[in-house]
Image 1: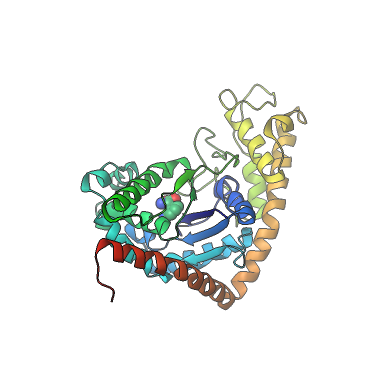
Image 2: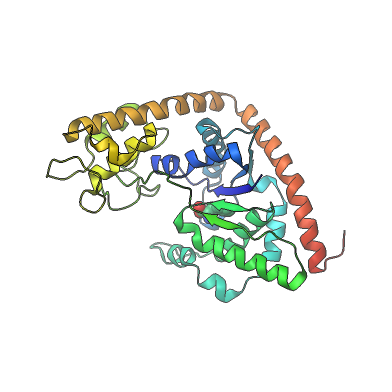
Length: 327
Ligand code: TRP
């Protein structure tokens, strides 16, 4: 079976865009892939953070992933810092990637130029080396991540190829896959931009959001004034977003769904209902998990043990090939 690896940062609430755009695909991929999913807490240290918040976000994100349908029995679900091979291989990666290559990363340029960022950590700069370690430690075939991560997967491939050519065949060179046909979820207030974590407020629906608030947000979603329900992203971004969310939540097709509606009101109401029905079992499962943190910790320990068994072998191979003495 082909192996997929993906990572997600524990940096705040999960929203509908994460759920419909990526996580439902992660869940699907468990069926026909050897799937490994990682909560990348070490990556969250690259920006200023609050320790208490990081701890809470990490366990909550793990619980959300399980609630959404990642099955710790079938997939490997673990927390990055529990598997010490990640930062260990990251050092070898840092010595295989160049300063110039890291300087060209747009994610680094964006984050280091952000207003108010006075302190740019060295970790923010070497972030892609740790990400490469995450991926290469598992002989990963595919990395299902959004388009914004393309450059990080490309640099991982470059590092793997360079390492293999310098020190002999060591790593599987992974491929980027944009999760197929995940729903496109835009901000409900600004349907020309992606729903995002940082854009809290009326345009973002969180997975743990109260249902009354979900209803209100859909009722107030921005549409347009020509009163025609049609899937047309360019001309009708708001309406198309609602159709896309409705399709994502019900497994339908946004173009076909448009035929069922003549007015925006019912489309909004049905989309809200579909989203609430999608979120209901997730929130219920999440509440159960939250009531019993020891069980989540147990599941994460099982995941970390399984991950470490693979990672230790790959790290040993890399250390030997690069010329480090066996300890
Ligand atoms: N950089 C990714 C993001 O911000 C998270 C990530 C870390 C990741 N390591 C990874 C994604 C390995 C895929 C594979 O979304």
